[in-house]
Length: 441
Image 1 (tube, rainbow, N blue to C red):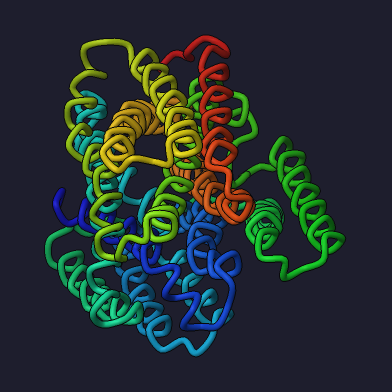
Image 2 (spheres, rainbow, N blue to C red):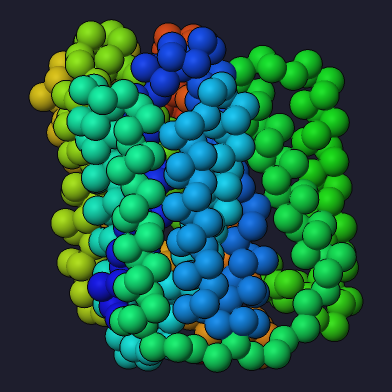
């Protein structure tokens, strides 16, 4: 069961970043500027982020195994649709459907791992989950480059579709059936959260391409913010809120979610910007750029289990803070080096490795903190799925914002601006990590 659940996580992560490296080729093939082509990357985490709490609730209500089977079937169909897409809007729509399918994976997988392996092995299981994420991040960029260079970017999706179908078979045969449990849902709040998150992130994602006037983007952002404010207000009084209002201010959950958001912002921005930088300024072949970027997620994956054990031997919050500080330093150094010295390849690889260390040190303690809040905090009585979904909404929302930040900052040609912005966000998350005392449980 463990390996099947981790494989679901791995495939979802690969699907998220597999088009990062062939993005320049994809944009040229579809006849759109690079700043618009970023939509093929950011539409996936946008939908993923908006729908995870709702799909976490669906997993609790109808059974997490059944939910994952339906999700993998949808993922296979959306991969085929993306491979056949004639233009960027169609591709972005199918990438969004892929994000919807993968939105079930984080809350369902994290919940099943926590349920089946218990609190004593929580840090270790979150380390395994983080390792699967890291391996997916490691495989995605080089896989996209290696497949796209000889056969074109569409071949990437033809490769992933049958893998999703194989996971359907594995889920049906290897993962024990899990009964859903009756739980209420405050539908107006669920609609407000999903619509608000999607609208707000859409405004951010669409801003770099210049496809919408600034006034329209402002209206979208304002509408999204109002919808999220309405969700928070309704959750405070609703009988069965999607996410309990008290969770939004619980110190442990807040620290974990903000740290994960900052970590994914830095990771998402680096995995989009570095291939563009290498294939542009360094004129590196697509496949070679993917192999260079491999250093970052490979470091994440290799350290995940070690960080899980470290969190069992010391306070996880200290590990998380060390990771955020490492991440900020590495991102700032990357921007300074690329600006002042033109980005020597060996130094860039070393900085990618240090960035991977920072991500690994943040990811496991943040996930363990969120799962502990889901199991013992104010969300426990209503089910952990939506709570873990909210945590992952903030994670992948950070990835979507990071990709959008690249679309805004990359055309300026200033690496220090791009990576310095990532460093600032990591330092803000570091400051938030000192907020409040850890709740009991």
